[in-house]
Length: 544
Ligand code: ADP
Image (cartoon, rainbow, N blue to C red):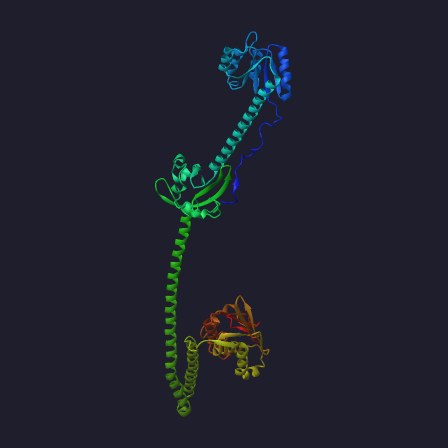
């Protein structure tokens, strides 16, 4: 609820200071006399007052006028034929509309009997003939003024009633429970929402402290305490307060209260809007509970995952160890096979026929090839055993220069062109990066077409990673084999090209060990581009 500066309660659409009847407004005076001369003389005397004078020459005529109009005062001659002034006055008083209209009797007889009768009939005064004009004017002026004031008061009362009704209907229409409090926080008015929310009849609440509904309300707003300061209640308005509401049956519930000060004719009062926030609080609590549950589940899941990762790592380590041990242990007997095959070939060739020599050649070749495969497997398994110490900054340009030195013979022999630009420095292990680049560049030279190999190595920043590309103009790879070539001992081109099929598997393992990814884009006859990403860290920057 918006809370603003104190507002002024006035009379709504009316203005207190504007009289309902101005001094210029005319009131009506009824002059009743059977003598036309008297009427003329009365009219002449009173015309100076500027009021509306209505003349009647009999009691009957006077009563006719009174049926339709209201008068500030009636000047009534006592002695009239048919119906005298007293009889006329009796009838005037018997009618509701004219019951309170002041009557001034005009009479020539100053008898007590006259006076008693007149006053009995509700006369407010007597004027004795001959009438002194000043006295007549001043007496009539008093009634004119009285009427003016009466009208004014009546209108003000109407305005007040209207304003009050408007205020109450606004209060009743409010969706929140609303209470109007006095300076000390006592309840002056409440709306029906208060009855509904708190279970009280409004009569039970009027005049009682707001604390009956909201304990600590005064404390919260500093009402009736020194905290209220000179400004009184409402000085602390503005913010909503979260407090506890208490129903008639003693049950408690959370409420949000906003107070607004109101400056009225009687001084400052405070309106308090009280909202039952049970549902909102429950919703917030539900969300919190749900979050807590979710967090717990995430924590549990994370712990489970970490456990699985640890188990996987363990299994992986075991597997690596097994591969390492197996390939290492197998090397020895294999070397014996190769050695003795060679001895037989060299020393006992004469005892062998051609077929035996041929088969022996197969045995020797097989043993040598197997030896190479075991060496590769050993190398592959060692990659998983992270024994290389912590990573350090490795400028990829330097790595490429070393690759060129290592592959110098092949480059010269194939007349290969190898270029690069924009290569960063990475937080990595130099030996692994050397293996990675050398395998990729070596393959790009090896799987060449007739044209001399042309190889370009590039790197660019993409989404927080480094994206490397090694592009060649070689024989290319069918897209359906783009995944397979990264498998251990997977080869596409048979014995036409030397190799064991472990190079790309090693590349994949190295890239993934740094959190990167490797893939290729190629078409047969159109060359290949191998891509790999390397997570960018602050240490990796452009070198050359
Ligand atoms: P190897 O070169 O020892 O056979 P790799 O694992 O390095 O083993 O490569 C696997 C296979 O992928 C290769 O046998 C070859 O068929 C294919 N290959 C690798 N690099 C290229 C390349 N640049 N162009 C064409 N084919 C390639």
